[in-house]
Image 1 (cartoon, rainbow, N blue to C red):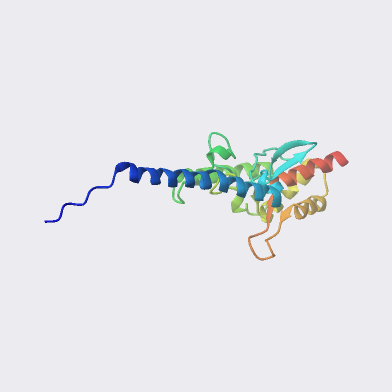
Image 2: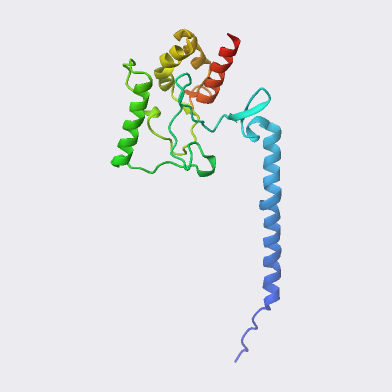
Amino acid sequence: MKPAPLAPRQGGILRPALTVFAALSLVTGLAYPFLTSGIAAAVFPHEAAGSLIMQDDKVVGSEWIGQSFSSPQYFWGRPSATAPMPYNAAASGGSNLGPRNPALAEAIQARIAALKAADPDNPVPVPVDLVTASGSGLDPHISPAAAAYQAQRVARARNLPREQVDALIQANTDRPWLGVLGEPAVNVLKLNLALDKLGKAR
């Protein structure tokens, strides 16, 4: 009868496991993040820093996080469902309301009413992205149709020719990457900053 094999010593298993754990922690927890962050800062410095928008040497926002506008003289962005305040990057997410949820229908009707009240003579149907929140709640863009819907209201509030406002919309429209990937979109913050700059120039 052969003797039963001896169980390996506990220290013999634990030591290699701890060594592998420490090595992987250094590689994946320190070396890799520092390497990728360094490459990003060198190759894409603007994007790596948060795609910040500067005005008069001050940070006024980011190209990728929307802001709330409610004055008639500004373009309004897409609604945000984040809490406790709109466009809260620390609580990114949608409302999770289904299409049959009465609360969603009520919210949409309220948003339509607000847009109609701000521009009662506008006969154009309200674009859907002006009354529905995005999945992230942070979307800084609206469609060109949503910008065009608001152009007459903004032009009237600022006493500007409609053609001048349309030109600003075109100048602040992001085009599809390589001409085929994505859809045209208007960055609301950039557009409103361009409006303010135009007002100062006048």
